[in-house]
Image 1 (cartoon, one colour):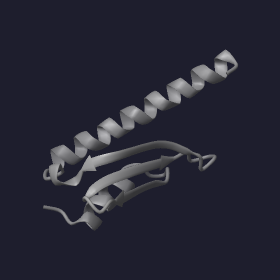
Image 2 (cartoon, helix red, strand yellow):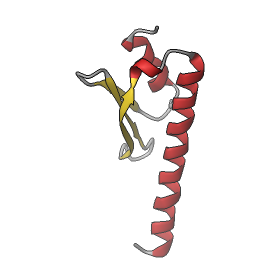
Image 3 (spheres, helix red, strand yellow):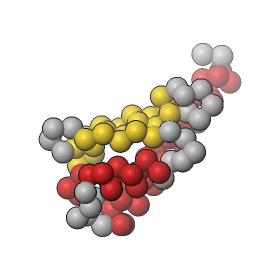
Image 4 (cartoon, one colour):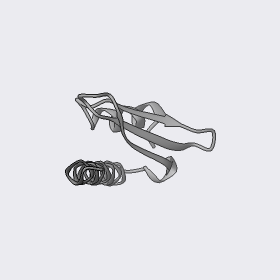
Length: 86
C-alpha cells in the first residue's frame, strides 16, 4: 500500500500544469481540489474519497479518470451558463 504522501503526489501531479491539492482528513478520507490554471479559481472539490480503496494502480487511475470527468463536466456547465447569459 502506498503512503499518503505518495498517493497525494500521484493525484496532484496528474493534474499538472493545473494546481491540485489533495488533503487527508482524520478519518483517512481524501479531499481533492483542482484549480483553474488561468484564474486560480477553485474548479472542483471532491470529498470523502476512501484512501483504503486506492490499493492498486488501476484504482488510482480510475479515481483520476473520474475526477477528470467531473472537472470536464463542470467546465461544460459553466460554459453553458456563460452562453445563456446567467
